[in-house]
Image 1: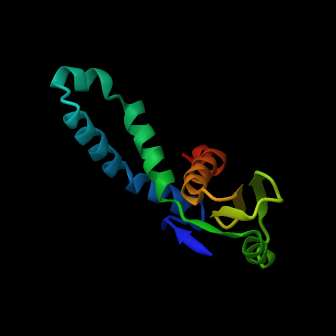
Image 2: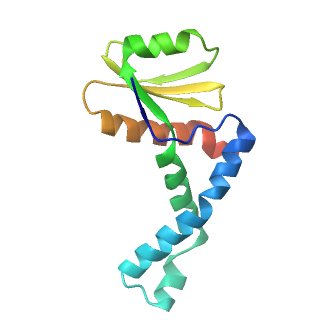
Length: 136
């Protein structure tokens, strides 16, 4: 079993705090990206909206979420001692699983055969959309 990322808030308050904490980083990323694209002041003002910065914040938060990957057996063993709602995507007959323990209440998981990095990225987007988006 492997762990990817480090953001694993225990509750809604911690999730909101972490989301707020990545706000300045998201603003910096957007600003530096616009600079690299050579936006002048006028174009920056027109194109870099609060929605753009919010999208960057969402993506940054999601990309930092802690995700575990392992075999189906490792996943099921990990689940045994936890009383969680499970939102599983994919096929139960696939060898590997990526999962995120969301707020200690819900596990969002996705099966994968061989493309672990893609599974982790996809799972982070799913976890953000199914759990965290409604909080923010």
